Length: 286
Image (cartoon, rainbow, N blue to C red; front, side, top):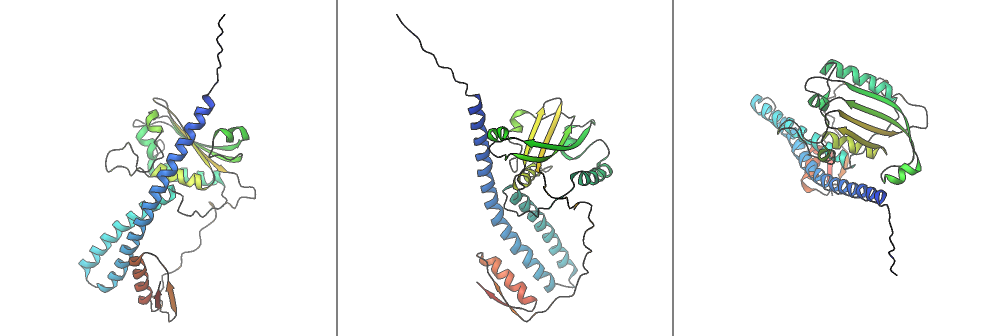
């Protein structure tokens, strides 16, 4: 007599966790690489911008030279803006976290978008809805329990504020969804996108202790869900609070103290020292 013993195990859950772990490791590796490159590039741009400021004073009154310096400085500032986005993705750009009233903030943002882009389109959703459509922004409270957190390694159980942004556009193919938060990944033609927008959002959400998910179906539209930790204290309503008055420009301040400039990049250290000396300080470098 022969017997056959069969054992069946459902590995669906384990496979999902493995996929999430691989995705998290990939994003972490990309973030480390991006952050390292951005840090070094940011040092180079700081040297360029700093020396341009010094050079601008040397050519004061020479109109053509000043225009050339302004052109270079504007390009350098755009490069610096890109590096800030990269650092946000890699979570190396410190955030100034504060409590906000999400509904107040979104109300102000939607009024701005309506005036700037029209009532039926906005940013990436505009490209997904070439003939128009509906862009919906909704908020509500959400809660992740221990079971959900156990199935999503990057999520902590607790209370969150959900911001859901949905469009009725063409949708995103599955192979694109898998890479949508990677820096410099874009489906737009050359010159029409840097591929840093969503990666910056990803970095901001993760650094804030939040969670982001995207749901899309080709032909039906896309929904981004942004989960931000719910503040436990009273909201500061920072979005509605008036900004501090802008301080008037002052004349160049001259000091007579000695300031120690500490920086491991020799070019950046030399630039900072020159700027300090130009302000009238004695600069000691290390």
